[in-house]
Length: 325
Ligand code: UDP
Ligand code: MG
Image 1 (cartoon, protein in one colour):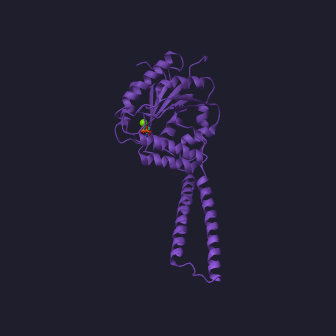
Image 2: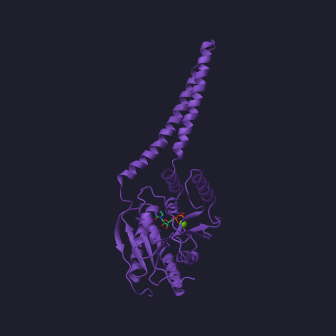
């Protein structure tokens, strides 16, 4: 089918992964060897680890791996912890220098690396973006499963185009990554950005394994990501406010008519209770509305600043040549 081997990079964001990184790196390297043996990928394919300001000795492990096999392992070190999305982007942007296609995956190897050959096959047959899509979520905790599914539904309802059950396990060609680099936003939500790029896209399904260590994505970080996903991609919350404002206006007019009617026909006018209710109700709506509008203003403010999304403090460049020990 394909008649050439692809030079690929596996991009792994790493935040405090010292407990498992070494083993994950060996597993990934063995997988690359296996794919190279079947002439699917070039032997110079490599693993790029993006250290996201870890506070343990993750960077030391990356440096050691690089010393042992500079052609196979490379790394970048972010100057501070910027979060999974920024670390991933940094790694992907860097990987363009060394590979024609990059595959992003988590350091705990929860995503089934046995589908990597399928990713590469899809790439070689002309797809620029290949999404890993989970066929089931039985390995997730109940909380993670329900929150994640609720989130996808909410995003869909908000009009954000996403691939259902796809996290950040995907292959992107250099061309697609170049396109991604054109998106300059600071509030990163890669899963929302990538489908906007276009080119040829394909899907590979897999089942996700239970994690080997506690998650580095606690509920708070997940909610923040969800919030970024919605407010960076959808203006529907603002539309909802407008709609709520219109409904409130209609209610006000109805009440006004009632008050006027009461006055002219000599009934007791609306007293303290109704006044209080009205004040509470509308000040509540106003506060929520101002809050949400404020959120968008805050986002605009951050985007206007054009701050760098990450800074790299060190680089371990891969050296060409021998990948066998
Ligand atoms: N990660 C990161 N920066 C962070 C948090 C996480 O680079 O601030 C990395 C982490 O090392 C891992 C990936 O993001 O490679 C996903 O994290 P985790 O496996 O904890 O998330 P989950 O699988 O629970 O979604
Ligand atoms: Mg994980």
